[in-house]
Structures are given as structure tokens and as C-alpha cells.
Length: 108
Image (tube, rainbow, N blue to C red):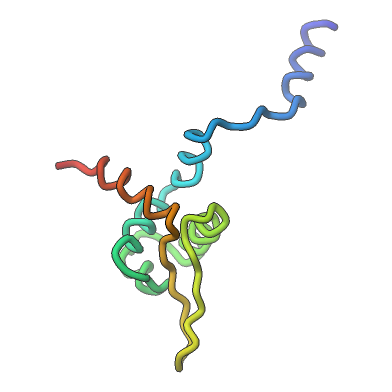
């Protein structure tokens, strides 16, 4: 196998499973994810409250980040059956464990 073929083979070889630390970092990295997690740390938070708490973001960015956090089982989305209907986001047990790490990284 020549050099170009080996290089191409490396590109098409399936990736090895990531280590748990790498997977955890991937779950919380992003421009808005840490701020969303912090906003939901103490109490359930609504979507519009997130938009107010993070004014430099936009609806699409917050929506995407929330979906990723939900897919990674860090945030739980709950439809509250009250008039008017609304959605709240709360941290899961796994999400609460990350809050301690985020708080530890804050400047003193």
C-alpha cells in the first residue's frame, strides 16, 4: 500500500470510542451550554428566561444547545400542563454533577 492509500485508509477508518472524559467535555462544550446549565442549576428555567439571561444569544442557538443537552441526558424538558401551557428545563442527576465542576472553574 502506497503512502496516499495509507493516508486515505486512516481517513475512512471508523473512529475509536472516545474516553468518558472526552465524551463529558463534548457534552458541555459550546458557546451557550455552560450558561444554560448554570441558569437551570437552582430552579427550573423557561426558554424565554434563558433568552433574557443570555441576551447575546438567539432563539436558534439556545434551541440547538437545549436539544443537545437533552440528548446527552443533562437537561430534562417538561411540558407543564397549566394555562397557558409552558415548557420548563431542569437538570437531570447527571446534569447536577456537572454543575459542581462548572462552579469550581469560576474565578474567585
